[in-house]
Length: 158
Image (cartoon, rainbow, N blue to C red; front, side, top):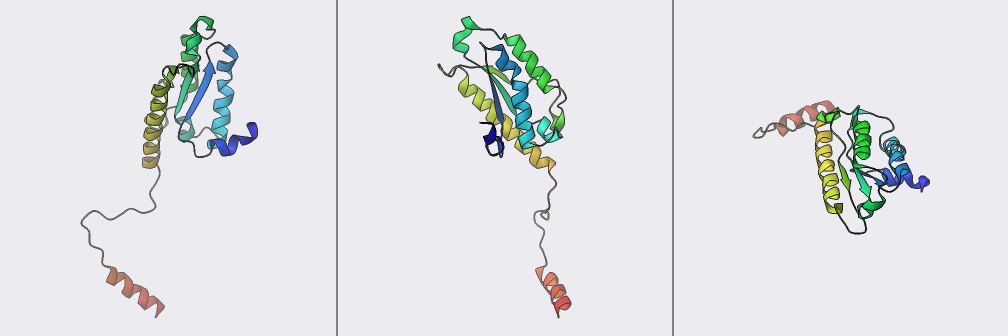
């Protein structure tokens, strides 16, 4: 699976990090997976990668009787992972979105994916606005004099 990383992550619009509410190690492993993802998409913690859309899912909500990871532990992880952000107007104290889900019963799955999609659209728009344009179109209603440009070109070539 590790060898698939670069091709798998390239072009991603959002990243969903999943831990198992019955396995505390899976929550701690999110640090590794988040770093792995950021290394493949951005190479470093640039402003853009720090604000990349992440959504965290605590899976197996249907096994709440076997819970070993509390919601507050997951929120603490989300706060820690969010700290240092702040690029593109995203406040650094904003938690990464967190959902407790169940793949078995589909609890909160649609909501989590809607959040990931929403975050991806917002991120892409902010990224687009932050990227300098190579071509700035003339103001609407402006008439371009193409004959003038052609005559200058013909004088140089003639």
